[in-house]
Image (cartoon, rainbow, N blue to C red):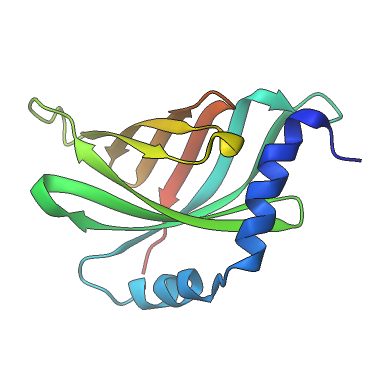
Amino acid sequence: MIRRWNLPLFLMLLMGLCTSCSSFHSRWKAAATSATEQRWEGKWTSEKHHAPLGGPEEGRLRAVTEPAPKGGLTAHFHANWLIFASDYSTTFQPKPGPRRNGVREFSGTQDLPKLFGGTYHYETTWAGDQLTTHYKSSYDYGTFSLHRVQR
Protein backbone atom coordinates (compact mmCIF):
# COMPACT_ATOMS: atom_id res chain seq x y z
CA MET A 1 0.00 0.00 0.00
CA ILE A 2 1.25 3.47 -0.82
CA ARG A 3 1.58 5.64 2.22
CA ARG A 4 -0.35 8.88 1.94
CA TRP A 5 2.74 11.08 1.78
CA ASN A 6 4.15 8.99 -1.07
CA LEU A 7 1.08 9.40 -3.29
CA PRO A 8 2.26 12.60 -5.07
CA LEU A 9 5.69 11.13 -5.68
CA PHE A 10 4.12 7.87 -6.88
CA LEU A 11 1.87 9.76 -9.31
CA MET A 12 4.77 11.84 -10.63
CA LEU A 13 6.86 8.76 -11.20
CA LEU A 14 3.94 6.93 -12.79
CA MET A 15 3.56 9.82 -15.22
CA GLY A 16 7.24 9.42 -16.00
CA LEU A 17 6.64 5.80 -16.89
CA CYS A 18 3.94 6.81 -19.31
CA THR A 19 6.36 9.09 -21.16
CA SER A 20 9.21 7.78 -23.19
CA CYS A 21 12.48 7.71 -21.31
CA SER A 22 14.23 6.79 -24.54
CA SER A 23 15.00 10.49 -25.10
CA PHE A 24 17.07 10.57 -21.90
CA HIS A 25 18.85 7.33 -22.79
CA SER A 26 19.64 8.70 -26.26
CA ARG A 27 20.94 11.93 -24.71
CA TRP A 28 23.00 9.91 -22.20
CA LYS A 29 24.65 7.89 -24.97
CA ALA A 30 25.28 10.95 -27.15
CA ALA A 31 26.83 12.87 -24.24
CA ALA A 32 29.60 10.26 -24.00
CA THR A 33 31.20 11.79 -27.10
CA SER A 34 29.90 15.35 -26.86
CA ALA A 35 32.28 18.27 -26.45
CA THR A 36 29.72 20.32 -24.49
CA GLU A 37 27.55 17.84 -22.58
CA GLN A 38 28.62 16.14 -19.34
CA ARG A 39 27.29 12.91 -17.82
CA TRP A 40 26.69 12.55 -14.08
CA GLU A 41 25.43 9.78 -11.85
CA GLY A 42 24.69 9.32 -8.17
CA LYS A 43 21.57 9.47 -6.05
CA TRP A 44 18.79 11.69 -4.76
CA THR A 45 18.04 11.63 -1.05
CA SER A 46 14.94 13.04 0.64
CA GLU A 47 15.62 14.69 3.98
CA LYS A 48 11.89 14.81 4.75
CA HIS A 49 10.54 11.36 3.82
CA HIS A 50 11.75 8.09 5.27
CA ALA A 51 11.57 4.51 4.06
CA PRO A 52 9.72 1.86 6.08
CA LEU A 53 12.93 0.82 7.86
CA GLY A 54 13.63 4.40 8.95
CA GLY A 55 16.33 5.43 6.48
CA PRO A 56 15.75 8.27 4.04
CA GLU A 57 13.84 7.76 0.81
CA GLU A 58 16.42 7.74 -1.96
CA GLY A 59 17.08 6.46 -5.44
CA ARG A 60 19.43 6.38 -8.38
CA LEU A 61 19.88 9.64 -10.26
CA ARG A 62 21.59 10.35 -13.57
CA ALA A 63 21.95 13.65 -15.36
CA VAL A 64 23.27 15.14 -18.56
CA THR A 65 24.26 18.79 -18.28
CA GLU A 66 24.90 21.31 -21.01
CA PRO A 67 25.70 25.01 -21.08
CA ALA A 68 22.71 27.36 -21.10
CA PRO A 69 22.52 31.03 -22.11
CA LYS A 70 24.09 33.67 -19.86
CA GLY A 71 26.40 31.18 -18.12
CA GLY A 72 23.57 28.93 -16.98
CA LEU A 73 23.48 25.17 -16.79
CA THR A 74 20.68 22.97 -18.12
CA ALA A 75 20.35 19.60 -16.42
CA HIS A 76 18.36 16.71 -17.86
CA PHE A 77 17.60 14.28 -15.01
CA HIS A 78 16.56 10.63 -14.94
CA ALA A 79 15.48 9.62 -11.42
CA ASN A 80 14.59 6.18 -10.11
CA TRP A 81 12.44 5.33 -7.10
CA LEU A 82 11.59 1.71 -6.34
CA ILE A 83 10.50 0.32 -9.73
CA PHE A 84 9.56 3.74 -11.17
CA ALA A 85 11.55 6.20 -13.26
CA SER A 86 10.97 9.80 -14.28
CA ASP A 87 12.72 12.30 -16.56
CA TYR A 88 12.70 16.07 -16.36
CA SER A 89 14.89 19.03 -17.25
CA THR A 90 15.60 22.30 -15.50
CA THR A 91 17.93 25.24 -16.04
CA PHE A 92 20.06 26.69 -13.26
CA GLN A 93 21.27 30.29 -13.41
CA PRO A 94 24.73 31.27 -12.17
CA LYS A 95 24.84 32.98 -8.79
CA PRO A 96 26.40 36.44 -8.85
CA GLY A 97 29.92 36.89 -7.59
CA PRO A 98 33.31 35.42 -8.33
CA ARG A 99 34.09 31.71 -8.42
CA ARG A 100 36.01 30.48 -5.40
CA ASN A 101 38.65 27.82 -6.07
CA GLY A 102 36.94 26.87 -9.34
CA VAL A 103 33.60 26.18 -7.63
CA ARG A 104 30.58 27.27 -9.64
CA GLU A 105 27.29 28.05 -7.88
CA PHE A 106 23.85 28.08 -9.44
CA SER A 107 20.25 28.49 -8.36
CA GLY A 108 16.94 27.84 -10.02
CA THR A 109 13.27 27.15 -9.67
CA GLN A 110 10.85 24.89 -11.45
CA ASP A 111 7.08 25.12 -11.30
CA LEU A 112 5.31 21.79 -11.11
CA PRO A 113 1.63 21.11 -10.45
CA LYS A 114 0.70 21.56 -6.79
CA LEU A 115 0.06 17.80 -6.60
CA PHE A 116 3.79 17.29 -7.17
CA GLY A 117 4.98 19.91 -4.69
CA GLY A 118 4.43 23.17 -6.57
CA THR A 119 7.54 25.27 -7.05
CA TYR A 120 10.86 23.54 -6.47
CA HIS A 121 13.85 25.68 -5.47
CA TYR A 122 17.38 24.52 -6.27
CA GLU A 123 20.82 25.54 -4.97
CA THR A 124 23.59 23.83 -6.93
CA THR A 125 27.35 23.64 -6.44
CA TRP A 126 29.68 22.32 -9.13
CA ALA A 127 33.15 21.57 -7.78
CA GLY A 128 35.35 19.61 -10.18
CA ASP A 129 33.81 16.18 -10.64
CA GLN A 130 31.08 16.70 -8.00
CA LEU A 131 27.67 18.25 -8.60
CA THR A 132 25.50 18.77 -5.52
CA THR A 133 21.99 20.20 -5.56
CA HIS A 134 19.85 20.98 -2.53
CA TYR A 135 16.17 21.12 -3.40
CA LYS A 136 13.03 22.10 -1.52
CA SER A 137 9.33 22.43 -2.21
CA SER A 138 6.13 22.31 -0.19
CA TYR A 139 6.22 18.51 -0.59
CA ASP A 140 9.86 17.58 -0.05
CA TYR A 141 13.44 18.72 0.49
CA GLY A 142 16.70 16.92 0.05
CA THR A 143 19.89 16.52 -1.98
CA PHE A 144 21.06 15.34 -5.38
CA SER A 145 24.63 14.02 -5.05
CA LEU A 146 26.29 13.34 -8.40
CA HIS A 147 29.78 12.60 -9.66
CA ARG A 148 30.96 13.09 -13.23
CA VAL A 149 31.10 9.99 -15.41
CA GLN A 150 34.42 9.87 -17.24
CA ARG A 151 34.22 9.39 -20.98
